[in-house]
Amino acid sequence: MIKKIVVSACLLLSLVSFAQEGTSSPYSFYGIGDVRFRGTLENRSMGEIAIEQDSIHMNLQNPASYANLKLTTFTLGGTQATTKLKTDTETANARRTTLDYLAVGLPLGKWGVGFGLIPYSSVGYKISSVSDDPAVNNRRFNGSGGMNKAFLGVGYKITPNFNIGADVSYNFGKIETNNFEYITDISIGTRELNTVDLSGVNFNLGMMYKTKINKKTSFFSSVNYSLESTLKTENTRNISTALYNSNFDLSIVDVLDDVKTEKNFKIPSKYTAQAGIGEARKWLVGVGYTFQGAGSLDNSYNSLDNVTYEKHSKYSIGGYYIPNYNSFSSYAKRLVYRAGFRFENTGLVINSEPIEDMALTVGLGMPLTGTFSNVNIGLEFGKRGTTAANLVEENYANVSVSFSLNERWFEKRKFN
Image: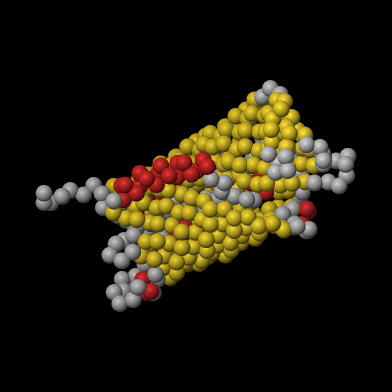
């Protein structure tokens, strides 16, 4: 059954990852867009804490975790995002539904393998700038697209308490931005269309370690390091004259020759360290820190004088609680209750104002009776940006659902 689900879901996500508009943030104009992937829902619900050596859930943040799997695991997650955007003078609301990730994990003795597809970043914005001054052109901006990751990773259990792992990701995608300038009451204007094709490879290394503190309590830790990588871009710029109607549907009437350029993004290395204590299948509390250098993320389509990129950092805290994971009399006692908090300096600086992102997360894991599989629900309430310096503040509420399905593969039959 799980094999049929995996094939169907892979086909679905492959199509949707190209078609979906995964964000409504004006900040997605910069860099490679709005980086949406933050791990599986189970980890996101704990403020992105992912330190326990779990045998039935995939941890997509650290490839060393694949060596812990005891069953073939398939995981799929999606999010309904609602965002309120506001400036000093205006407000707007937006809603998006997205698929977040699809992955399969295979246990192979001391080894473990994980592979899947992740819609990693998204571009999606629509902005109007209308002036009462007839000497100043009105402008309409919109963008779409993003970057996806197809990954393959392996983990190896050196000792019962110590794992190492590595994965490789192939990054690919397309970003398209439009800039249309016009004068009020004149149904003709100028359109600039930028199309950017992205491609590249990056590597991630990880380690996980646990040890007993006393009879019940254990110490857990996780370290992973993403190597600096290059993201190749092939840019095409097209400038044309266009007619428009009241709905701003454009009819192209005069087109200049395309201008093609190439410029690479430099994605800086990233280091994440997490640690915590807990009692396996009972409770866990952990903290984490992520550091990433300043990237070279400006290109011909998104370079502005008032924008710079600085070092990125993130602080996380979170955990879970299970009243009684093997209770026969009460389903509620087998539920997993998760919560967490994260604070992030995104590394983006606009008008000398750093863009920060913070969120409170909660979640619930619901086991499927008679199996090791489960359904997870998560809520995330957060704020990004500021209304200072003529910027936009985003207040968002995300509702996410994921499935973690488990089954035994590669098992020899004892009877025919």
